[in-house]
Each structure stands twice: as structure tokens, then as C-alpha cells.
Image 1 (spheres, rainbow, N blue to C red):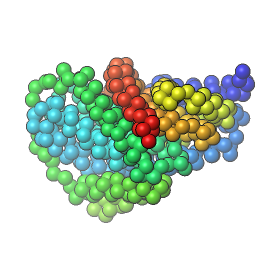
Image 2: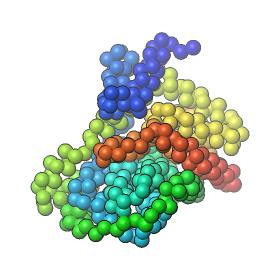
Image 3: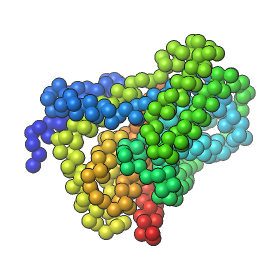
Image 4: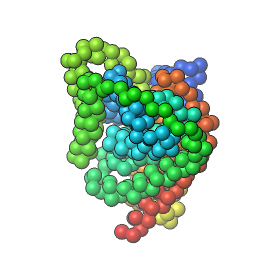
Amino acid sequence: MISLHAAVVYLIATAAIGCVLARPRGLPEAVWAVAGAAALVCGGLLGWHDALQGVAKATDVCLFLSGMMILSELARREGVFDWCAALAVKGARGSPARLFWLIYAVGVVVTVFLSNDATAVVMTPAVLAAARTARVRNALPYLLACALVANAASFVLPISNPANLVLFAGRMPALGDWLRLFALPSLLSIMATGGALYGITRGELAGPRLQEGATPRLTGTGRLALWGIGLSAAGLLIASALGKPLGMPTLVMALVALGLAGIRDRRALWEVPRGVPWSVLPLVAGLFVVVEGVEKAGGLAACERALAALARLPGWQGSLAGACGVTALSNVVNNLPSGLLAGNALAHTMVPNALRDALLIGVDLGPNLSVTGSLATLLWLIVLRREGERVSAWEFLKIGAVVMPAALLPAVLVSVLQHMTR
């Protein structure tokens, strides 16, 4: 039986995360995350020291997101998205289906080398611009491709998802070991997700030929933004290979790109920061503090007991149950809090490597079930709202209920099989 203290903490955490996902009165997600964190601290349920510890844990993720958002806004301001959109439509040669697969393939590359959050922030405006340029009958299949590939390809590399950093914390495998563990499950995840989504939306992709517009000229500052994105990808790979935190290199690259753009056009120095959705940062920090409160109230101990029970199950059963369990948790409370809980529990519990890897797949791929599943999907929704577009939770769930299991099951089973054959 849980104590009154723990019950109140769980109630506040549930209410805060629920409001983040439901956005009552249309208030930004960050308002509710910060309110939940403040309620825990001001109510004496979480000490200031513990709250600051939670914020400290969010630092690397926030630095990473800051850099990506600066690069994205710089690219948007300089017309990079419109330029990319025109190239994509031209490459599709009038075929809606070819445009779908082109967008999906680019999404894989962006996710692998820049993270799933970058795919949501950087690619979504470009995809929407491409759909508008081509005057497609329905932009939803292309927007869903952008959202779903962001999670499906998010465990190819450690840098492909901030949740990977959270789950493995200081126990991140070397890059070569990571590829050996996750290359094949990731490939299956990418193929199954793309195939399932295409099968569901095929009717919408059989519309009339796309219209091609003139390809806009990319400015010198736009080329700088592209170079900044490319250098960020290179820096992230180097930092990952060296086992270093990824947040600061990303932010430094973004600030360098912004500084160079400012030399050419001084207005960029204040217009770009003004256009960045900075509310994402208190959202992340607030969620980390709320999770810290849940952990201190016994949530961490409960996760450790659950992991110990899963570790006693026969190999594939424990791994599959673990992946499904963390998938369910991620779609209820978002994969960043669930990944943080699972990662801290793994640090104190001995489990088979197959179970650990299945948990990672569940944290990364499982959120494709619903719009509440991952930070990347929330960012995707924020970008869509900014562009005047809406995708309902029900529309997403109908697709995710088919696409996510079709990818999760083979990815987990292949991962388990790899461990059994070693």
C-alpha cells in the first residue's frame, strides 16, 4: 500500500502530464509541465535540491534541442525549406507515391544523423511546403511519414534520439557495439513502418499528377544554414564515437552558423532567436522534475521490481513483455519520462542484455502508437500548429495502431534472436 505522500505525488504527476498532452484551454504544454514541477516543490513533496537535480539531468537534452531549433529557424527564415520542397517535388516527377518514398528516405537520413527531434523540427515545415507546392490532394500521408519515421529510425545510432542518451545515461555502448546490436532491428523497423504506412494511405497517394513549380534560388545565408546542419551532424557523430555529451556540440554549431549568418544579415541575430519555440525547453525541464518527484516517491523502486520480474521470465518472453510495457508507459506519459524512469531503474538492476535492448526499442519505436508517445511527435504537432495545420489524436491513433505493432514485434524478436545466437 502506497503512502499518502506518494499518492499525492503520483496524482500531481498524472495531472501535469495529462494536461501537457491534452492542453486544456489551449495553453502551451510547457505551462502544465512547469506547474506540475512547481506544485511538487512548493507543496513540500520534492526538495529544491532534488528539483535542481532533475533540471540538471535535462541539461544535455535542452542544449541539443536549442541548437536544433536555432538551425531550423535559420533554415526556415532563409528559404531552405522552400528550396528543399521544390527539389523533392521535382524529384518525384509528378508521382504522389514517389514523393512519399522520397520524403520517407530523407526522413531516415535526417533522423539517423540529426535525431528524431530534428526530423520533427527541421523536416516538417519542408514536407508541408512540398505538399503545398505540389498541390497534393491530401497532405496527411506525407506529414505522417515525417512523424513516424522520426521514431522508426531513432535507434540506428545513439544520436538518433535523445531518449537513447536518457535510457543508457553513462552506460552508452561504443558506436561499433551499438551498430552490432541495433542495425538489423532498426532496418526492420524502418522497412515495416514505411511499408505499413504506405499500405494504409495508398489510396490517398493514387491521386492526380503533382504540379511542379519553379525551384527558388538558395541564398548565401541559406547555404550557411545547410552547412550548419551538416556540420552539426558530423559533430554529433564524432561526439557519439568519443562517448561525449551531444548537447553542447549541437548548440555551438548552431551559434556559429547564426553568427556567420549575422555577418551577412545582422537582422538574423535577433529575428532567428525570436522565431524559436523556446517553450520546448521548460517543457522538457518540467517533465524531468516531475519524473524526479515520481522516482523519489517510490516510482523508481517499482520500476526496479518490475525489471527484476521481467528478468526472471524466459528470454524472449521477458524482452517482449518489457518492450510492450515501456511502449504502453510511453504512450501514457511520453517516452522521455518513461525512458528516464527505465534508465534509472536499469542503473540499479541486473537484467539480461536482451531485455535492456528491448526496452530501448520500446522507448524509441513504441511511441508511434499515439501523438502522446514521444517528444518528437509533440514537436511535430507544435510545428504543424504554427503552420496552421491540425492532425487529430484519433487520426494518428488509427494509423499508429497498425503501423507501430507491425514494426515493434519483428524488431524486438530479431534483437532477442541476435542475443540468443551469440
